[in-house]
Length: 358
Ligand code: I85
Image 1 (cartoon, rainbow, N blue to C red):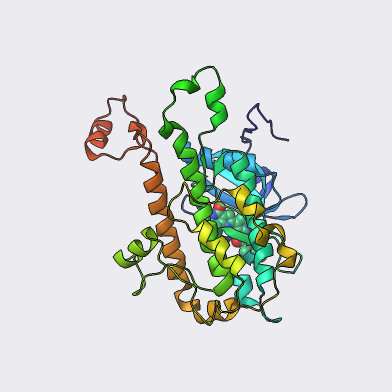
Image 2: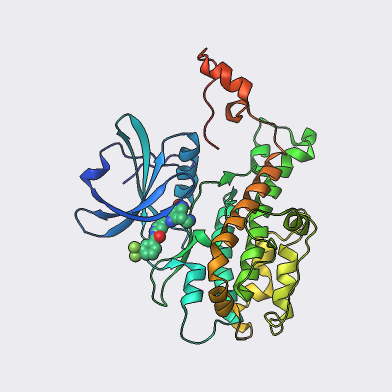
């Protein structure tokens, strides 16, 4: 068993991972910070997923936040973490439960047995919201909520949907911290309290985009000419210009459209919080949502060729959103990639550490 400290953080094992696990060559996916391969428990022969990370501050944060969030039913579970060195390279090795059901939208696209309905979409949204609520309650913002990070445990209908990849997750400012004796709340400036709201609201925006795609099979914002995020698309996102075109949206309930509007609200201070989303009747009473057949499966199949581009676009707009919200903070010298600073770092005064990859 791993030791758990007062903050719920655990320490990685330093024994060789290969004592307990057999690592295969099967690649399950590539994350920004590391690749994910299949592996097996040597004793039980049970299948797991292994994420290999270069050991640095950023990787430590990813593992720490993911580990702390592992208790949630809708978050991919961490089984074990190892710190091992391979030919001088320090690695963090994260053993996770193996999600064998693949990605959320692939599953909807592959469905043969009748159309996907609005009620099913509501049930899926509720599951994703449960993961986000768990995180936000712990003051963690995921900041990379996108279809590729939503995976099913098994391919059969009993499969559970879970969220993964904490590579961009961030501990948000908690108001509780300000109640500790080191701060006097009377004098605290609003921007000090601000960032918490923005980081979490970034997740709500993403939830709105995911809900929109679930209900029609295409995203609310996209470039007209594919590839890179276009000035036109940027403008549409900034001004919140999207619509609910027919025939795909014709029979979708007004409740669903209203909820999307409240989540895709351009002013982050006006956007719903996760608790408000959970209390919305389309989510809270998902079993009463109409069983309207949706165009999602067909649209996903028709758009199959451009789906990788849609995913790239979502990745890019998430990156923009994180940068925008991070600008609220004062830049930390350790993390800047200023060419002049890098020169001084290279000269090796030893006073300024190399920046961590962002
Ligand atoms: N299982 N974003 C896209 C995958 N089990 N996947 C991604 N970041 C991660 C891959 C690229 C997510 O942190 C990712 C991460 C973790 C996983 C992950 C964790 C646990 C899986 C990047 C599978 C899978 C899918 C279908 C079949 C099978 C496995 O990806 C299997 F071979 F088991 F049948």
